[in-house]
Image 1 (cartoon, rainbow, N blue to C red):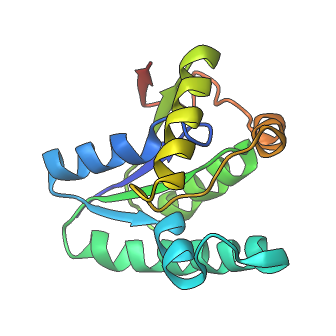
Image 2: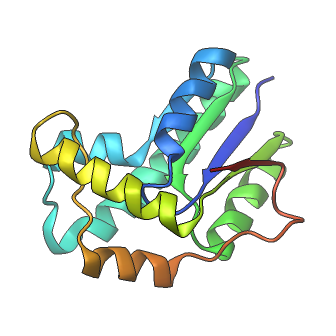
Length: 159
């Protein structure tokens, strides 16, 4: 049986790049809410963005169990910014006797700002499909993010 790997970190901290590298190294299946949201709605899902995100997460949790039962590891790349969401995810897998790890992307403020600027530029010139993070959105996400405690973290990646 496979395991679930939760990728936790601030928006634009390097989660997706890490998740992709981990997927390649381990032959795991990568499940990304942003990938689905961008494919279905482009950059603008409007005022129903959060509702759609919740529905996609629920679907991907259920789909991840199928994949894990087939023997593959699953990487869930959607931030897990809030402690309650991390606790719920770990409980979801524990209730199904599935191993679950939290990989935390720990990025300092300087590197974080540089990554946001780099990604925004890449989006603007069409090199990548992702959300633009302006200063207002950056502050909003920063205020929402609850860093995991040491007892939550199984693997810490520092930048």
